Image (cartoon, rainbow, N blue to C red):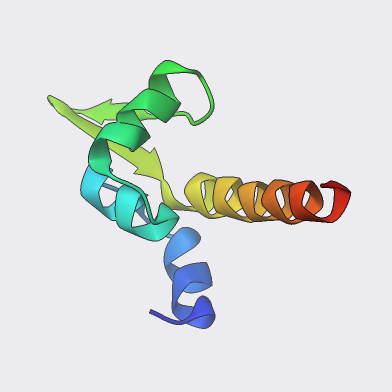
Length: 74
């Protein structure tokens, strides 16, 4: 997926745990750890977890900036 596609999707859809994990480049279990830690929000659709695509994209951008700053300050 390219950035334009991600931005368009981020404005219009909810993501499953697997989709959020793929977008973030982490495992599904790590996504669960992030929601349990309160780092990302979720909502339920029936019995399924769903994540706001725009929020996941924003979290990813913030994480990338934090990682870049860590490398600069190290």
